Image 1 (cartoon, rainbow, N blue to C red):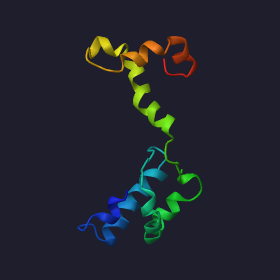
Image 2 (tube, one colour):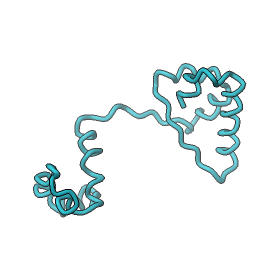
Image 3 (cartoon, helix red, strand yellow):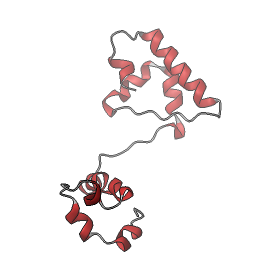
Image 4 (cartoon, helix red, strand yellow):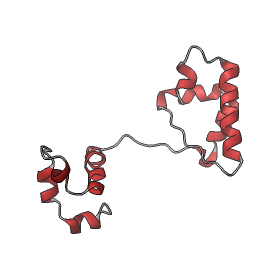
Length: 112
């Protein structure tokens, strides 16, 4: 969403029309609108009253930066869905991780 404020070719009326279209989609009950915006642009949301209204209440979820452990999970956990990586990628250096992480532990963490 920060592109609303960083693109030179998008003027104030264009921003307002875009947010109005998102609001119409979000309010019709048939569409879920999921949008992201970097925190340094939050203050600029005040320029668009309809965007402020969309963010009100449960319309905004603030996420903290990931911890070191969470970054590791983002890297490793998606690979559990593809089976043993050494079978697909013989040169992968992650084989040691999978050998040390048992299936029962994977099930415990909900990733198998």
